[in-house]
Image 1 (tube, rainbow, N blue to C red):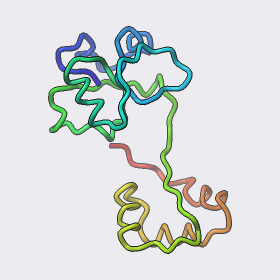
Image 2 (image 1 turned 90 degrees about the vertical axis):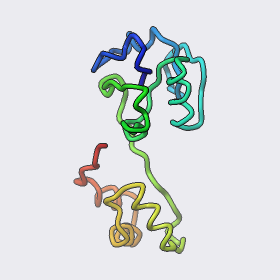
Image 3 (image 1 turned 180 degrees about the vertical axis):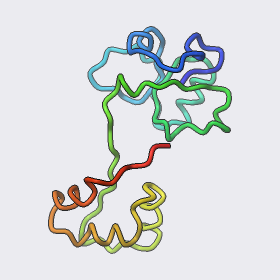
Image 4 (image 1 turned 45 degrees about the vertical axis):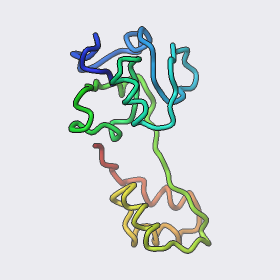
Length: 140
């Protein structure tokens, strides 16, 4: 993500070398030597810094709202970063209240009340992984 006045703003795809040439406003990126000018705890703070022209940033596509973030533009960098999956965990013995099921489904639309209950009764984490093996996760 860069602000609209940035040199990279008109590019649809960038390389790691192009990214490394600019100050970075980001979360922690392991194993890379980057010129990081700020770190932040959430995407909204990162977007504020980028909008002010303090650097460029790498954030998840789901954190970008084209209407709210109209002062910035994005480019595709998926080829230079490894894919990460975020997971929700809880103890099998935990009683899940309806608001917990609601949160889980807000987090991942395919995790309905019934799907979560089916996962809970499985015997192991390997069984749960196998249950979701063929699930195509939506991309925003």
